[in-house]
Length: 265
Image (cartoon, rainbow, N blue to C red; front, side):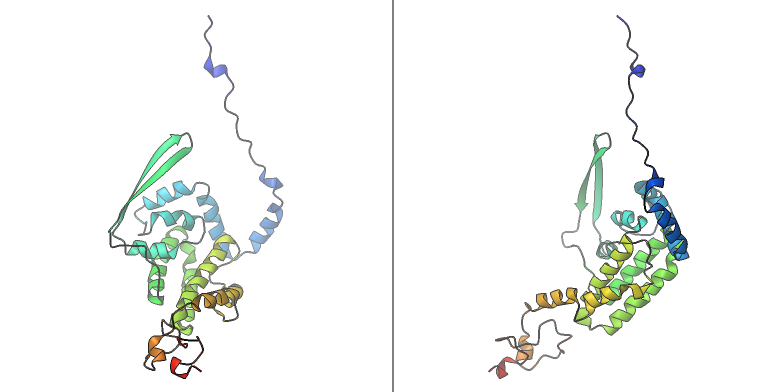
């Protein structure tokens, strides 16, 4: 019998290295990148570095004394330059739950994550409902962003001013539409690599869609509102709120017309 040297066998096939020079967008990208706003160039450089190993970047950051309080599951999106779920940030700010995560390796390269939420029975996922809650949550988000992207202070501050202006000029019952617009804007910025949050002139189409009465998204919202109950107090002539501020619709409880039920033909 002859000893078999296991080292003489064929090793695992190496994954071929991709030739980035053949990417058709590469030459144009170099030109476009040179024309980008300097703050966007800095953001792209950091995102490219973080996304080489997002989990390693998150591990380093969350183990740093400079790490602010921020939900762990949102760090990956933040470091990748994607939109963060502000409702999750708001929930975490007010949470007393403890989320225990255990990782079990099934095979090489495949792991199963099991999460056990040691939650307060009276506690549930929160949703931002007013301008003050959004502003407070934005402050928390800003502190997290500035650790990973220190140069974005001006961009985030200008965007907050833009949102504050929208809250001031939009009827309170329709602030929910401003929250939807905010998500749409941040999704666009997270998907694109050539827009700053502070470049609000690039969001006019989203404004029309989500907060203008002629917008497509707004029309869908209005169709959903048509199912709301008619205000009983308004129909009785005693509602203290205007139509824009009442949680119920100021329409006839019988025919849904724009008159109280006492005037219904």
